[in-house]
Length: 186
Image (cartoon, rainbow, N blue to C red; front, side):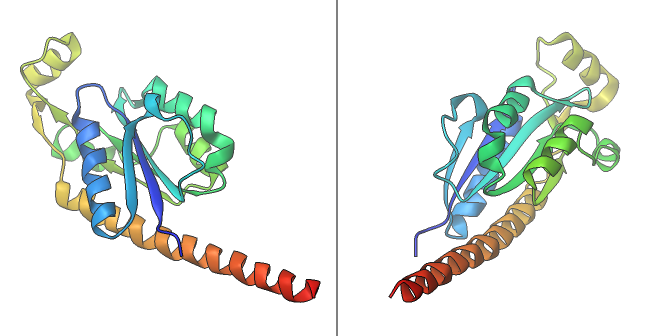
């Protein structure tokens, strides 16, 4: 049987969400799943993958435009594979507990493609930034790294387990149907 293949695609501004995507990819690889990790803008095709993990940095409660464009571009193909979503960005320990739901447009997409699940991970804000909004947030006490890599790893392990069970089951059904067609043809 072929190896499972997954794509981890993300939209990141300063690299924090990309680091989360790499951590997810590393965990998937450790479970035996062949994994590619790419920025959403570099993805040309998703049909060679059994599953896709799509993530975006969240700013002002919204996903980044290139992540939304990815959903539009590959929506039809994503319906035919396991899709998992993550968002990264809430700052402060209480903010991560509050910002758990997906933005409405992303929730609708998740429903449309039959996403298996999603997660919200804390963000990271470097106080040495030139961005005016980031400077304001840093002065307000929100600088720091609020990502929990243990939580990220546990979620990625769940993704690996669920995807493996679903994809292997679907492959077995397809193989059984193929055998049944061959027997019926004789």
